[in-house]
Amino acid sequence: MDGIMKPQILIVDDESRMQRLFEINFAPKYRIMTCGDGREALELAKRQPIDLLITDLKMPGMNGLELLQQIHRDHPDLPVIIMTAYGTIENAVQAMKLGASDYILKPIKMEEMELLIEKTLSLHRLREENRALRQELKILYGPENIIGRHPSMQKVQQLIQQVAGTKATVLIQGESGTGKEIVARAIHYASDRSSKPFVVINCAAIPHNLLESELFGHEKGAFTGAIRTKKGRLELAHQGTLFLDEIGEMPKDLQAKILRVLEEQRFVRVGGVEDIEVDNRIIAATNKDLKQAVETGLFREDLYYRLRVITLSIPPLRDRKEDIPLLVEHFLAKHRAVCKKEKIGVSESAMQRMMEYSWPGNVRELENALLRAMVLCPGDQIRLEDLPDEISSSPKSPVSSVPTDRESLKAMKKEIQQKIKSEIEKNFVIDALKMERGNVLRAAARVGMDRRQFQNLMKKYGVSKSEFQ
Image (cartoon, rainbow, N blue to C red; front, side, top):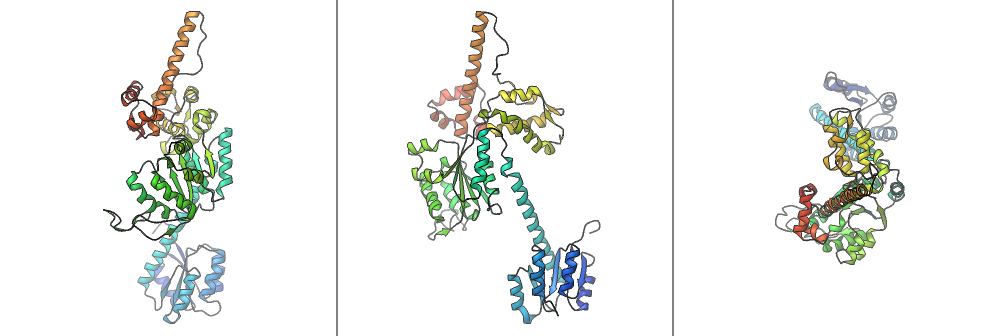
């Protein structure tokens, strides 16, 4: 372990022979400190960091239980192993209840002690890494990462702060790519549930016949292939947050079961008979008009009103274009290190075109376009030609020149009308395919066209269904 900082272990035992045994056996692998009583151990712990405390239970003056309680007041996360004789096992169990990591019986075999030390240190490292990861997630998905100065986005940021501390159900509405999941995570990580799981299930991405099992879990033998009992997402999200993405795609029979969860916080696994109680905060999201779905009978009215206790509406990017420069800088900063281009920026012409483009894929499309440009651009500046073709070749909305006579006016008007028509038709096709996740037949039916007509428009504008599946 040369060159690597060894873990520091404090051994507390009133027998000098035991102190010496620990030094002989473990000094090559760990930094070993020893002392003979609890009060001296507390003083040592104040002066320097300790990775593990191993203490005898029975000692004169301050015993091991008292030392455990005292040291955890100042160092609540310090792992402690208790050494005890057979006659004091009950006290060892009491020590575990007070927060000891483990105990070992005397006489001690050093091989067993080494295994116990390694296990305890490994578990402690995992807990520390988990705590650090959760803190990073809290920073990464905190409300401050909802980028935008537009009034509509400031309202979203304000609502996140207001609802985070409650258990109120939230319905997030917005087009695909606007960042509904990011908003849901921001609510979770700003809440007192942030240390508990944030579990996602996309109701549109899982076949209807599997969705019930994914949500509620199933008992062994509930159906062919159910070879063992499986917990569903509801159980996995216990004490945390369950995010139901694209809830508008949920079958009506499951809608009734989700309604029961919202009202009673209980459910039954597939093939089960017993109620399972859960403590979930449910956040739902949709890119559909759920009110219209209620009117057409595709969505339960009672569930709709139960979900929309708090409604957050995220505007499309085309309605808040003044936020594009902020988002561009945010995504450049996010991907600079990965792309190994720490100084990369955006040219004026590229930024101008991004401001003109309609962004049918919203913020997700913007991030993907920038990431692609960062990878492909040869220098430290993203140029117009580095952007994807559909963006770099998009028609400019302002008129570049003023016509000088009647004929040029007529020609320019016709040209502009044709460009606008083309852009509208292309976005019309793209949005329909997005709503139906690349299913051409359903997309055509959604917009009131037959399949051949819709496919002709796709061919005309070079739109592939695979982009949306």
